[in-house]
Amino acid sequence: MQLSSRQIQILVAIIEQYAEVASPVGSVTLAKLFGVSSATIRSEMAKLEDMGYITHPHTSAGRIPTDKGYRFYVNRLNENNDSLLEQGNLLLNADNNKDNLTRATSALCSRITAQNNRADQSIRSAVDSLVELTGNLGLATIGDQLYINGIYNLFSQPEFESGEAVQSVARLLDNLEPWLKEASPNEPINVYIGSENPIGKTSGVSLIISKFSSPLSENTYIGVLGPTRQNYSKVVRLVKHTGEFLEDILGE
Image (tube, rainbow, N blue to C red; front, side):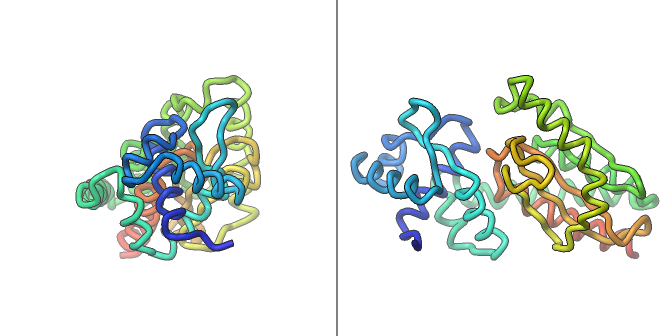
């Protein structure tokens, strides 16, 4: 079933607000946002839940996105669907979002360029920058090794307060390097959301990686690992741009 324009707007608003506040999003908040009644919002939320795009945790009246909801959102980002981004910028100022992303990208490029005399240093610098800019764990393959930074960032997220959740993510990290070598994802940007992760279906994280060529390997990867609740609009674009920029400067 195709989503209506209003349903898309509500889904995007839930995804983006939940990314910011880490709390289920209620109908009252959305009703104020869209200027309609709470009953109207609840009706649309019920339809979105029936279709599997959102769910409600425990006894909360609010809703949170499902992996299917995130996948819908990320697919539109990958298609460069600007109309979706405009719909999603209901809670935050669109111009500020664009300005912040531009500044983040410029800062990342400057930091990488300062280290471009050595490929391994450039890649490490890029990972460190992604950690700072996204608040996620950053990673990259450097030759035959996997460089990781930002573990504290990842485990500081509210999703990973339990020991079981931490163990699940740790198992994913232990198997990430051999999986990358075996699977060799070929897309310039790959986004594995929650249960889509082939080596961590129950880990509750999203892996966003970019493939690029470097003097160290034709199949080099850089990206981030974070909770499924994150700012995909910002993170996906930063990771994609980082891979493209690294390939450009390391190929010179």
